[in-house]
Amino acid sequence: MRRVFTIGLFLTLASTLFSQTPQIDQLQKQQKMLLEEIKSTNKLFLDVKKETTTLLQRINLINKQIASRKEMMTLQNQEIAALEREQLRLESEINRLGESLKQKQESYAKAVRVMQASRSRQNELFFVLSGKSLGESLRRMQYLRDYSKWRKSQAEEIKQQNVQLSARKDELAKARTGKQAALDALKAEQLRLQEEEHVRQSEMTEARGKQRELQRMLQDKQQQARKLDAQIEKLIAEEVARQEREAEARRLAAEAERKRKAEEVAARVRREAEKGRKTEELARKEPDKTEDVKPAVKQPEPKIES
Image 1: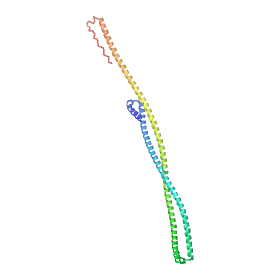
Image 2 (image 1 turned 45 degrees about the vertical axis):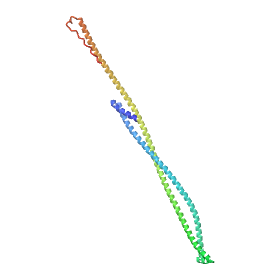
Image 3 (image 1 turned 30 degrees about the vertical axis):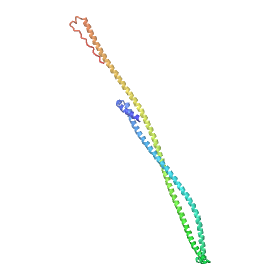
Image 4 (image 1 turned 90 degrees about the vertical axis):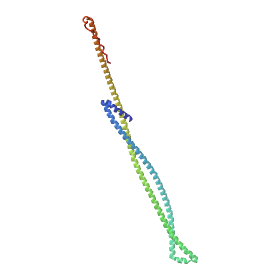
């Protein structure tokens, strides 16, 4: 790129010297347009490269979020598995307590039937007074009291166990429902992130393809610019050589003209000298005629200018 700019600057300066050459002028216009295209393509390339970097950063962030969601889902699955194990344990406990409760209910029902059968034969007062002694009667009275308390405590215990088991079952069901809802939310978020990652990957593939295409275009244009540089340099060198040849031809023509003029001056001087010599000879041959004639003055030879 720097070479193209340098040659472009050189061509701008050279255009003032060789603007009269149409071919060079046309190539310089092409060169200018090509430099603008290279500048524009390079800007697009940098923009796409920046976009690709941004997309890559976004994909890395999404991958981190996906990994985090996977860890959270693993924890949720572990918690749900623990709740399921607890639920199984509780169901086993419920079954055990159910058997115990069933036995207590059967025992309680049997005792109630016995009491009801006893009451049908005799009342409690007769049962107490029928003791053989006062101590036995008192023991029978205490027995009736204890038996009444036992029946009440058994009924209350059965009721409390039923309430506790129902509450624990509801608690586990709610906890498992909450954990499952959280897991479903994580799965939905994971799916959304995976879809976004797919979209970003598609955008990344497209951006990288565009980046490669712009890079190829940029390289092609730079190659064209280098070819134009070489072509223009060649034409400029040819133009310089042509102008040098023309200058040399003008110099040689001027030198020839100078020599021609010098030779003309020398020939004129020689003619003048020859004329003077002939005049002198003629004067010597006719002395009588030249007594009154003054001798001819020899003219100085003209100086030949170089």
